[in-house]
Amino acid sequence: MSNGPMYERFAEDYAAHAVDSAYNALYDRPAVLGLAGEVRGRTVLDAGCGPGLYAEELVRRGARVIGFDQSPTFVKLARDRAGDGADLRVHDLTEPLDWVDDRSVDVVVLALALHYVDDRVAVLRELHRVLAPGGALVLSTHHPMDDWKRLGGSYFAVEVLEESLSPDREWPVRVWRRPLTEICREFKEAGFVIEELLEPRPVEEMAVRYPEHYRGLLEFPAFIAFRLLPV
Image (cartoon, rainbow, N blue to C red; front, side, top):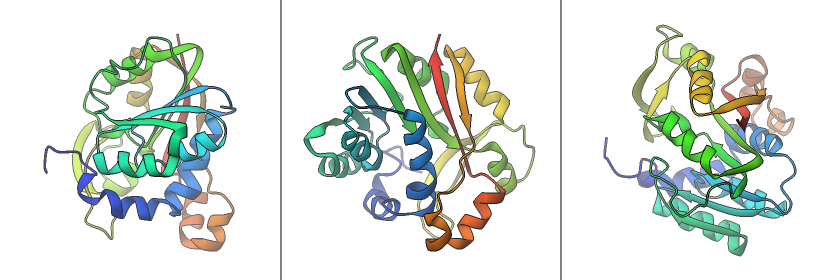
């Protein structure tokens, strides 16, 4: 795989897909935004903002949004989508946020991005640094049981692998699988405690638009989401 931004080669196709897809629009996005809670008047950092679908809704809800993604195409799309209500830039999640002051952010949103990172604890520590007292990190990632169901092998494996983001599209990604114990260990090592853990359920609209996905997600989770507090 290329060392360039992973999503860049299919950014526009992914963005068009994610707008109203089952797993983003009707599953992860409602879960993450729900855990973010009331954001009106608060500063929210959208880390790994993608094409701006979360940022757009956060702006609509009255948040002051700053954010970034390593894909220039995603950042352009996100700026077009979120408008003047969001300050978005090209930046790599694994690099220090030297443009964000200590304790200056009320909520960090990190949606479906952490599993792409090699040194996850370093990223989490940097997000911890920018959170204000009383702030929270809201993140989602692959559910480890879904990884085990899809990939087989040991549930407790901690390994990096290459696969397609979608089984019916050529969207190659490099992703980590790890068990829930490892996920929680990383949170603790970075200085966070879990306030809330959520195994999302699909919204009812999915039952009409994507009935097969809806039935499957009622029985088995694909993602897992957390609201973390810095300590």
